[in-house]
Image (cartoon, rainbow, N blue to C red; front, side, top):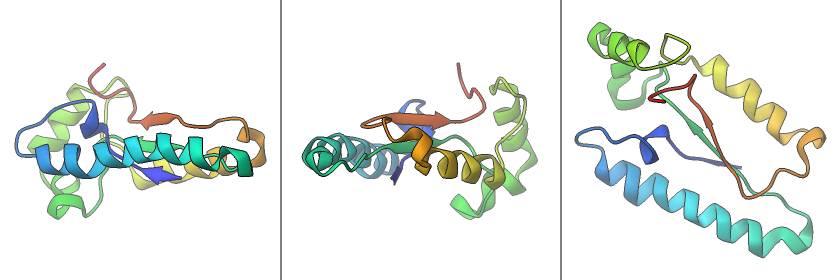
Length: 114
């Protein structure tokens, strides 16, 4: 299981290094890992959270009302995400019920920027 970011799909200013060099690389690496580890029956997927109210970037989504409002306006479910929106999805993906899910990028963003 790898963690990426919604920023690999939606571009925001001053995020190119994070999105391209870190998270974009994680997504490409996951495809190669899925191919190379498949013979061992190891599934490799990437979860890409959207804007989540955490300490990330100094807590800007959580602590800046203007940013939180913007995220809410461009998200189909009408709010920024919470950590509890991501954890259960990852837990579900790791369950045996999803053993055939492999080499996927799964965005968990509440419908951000669709």
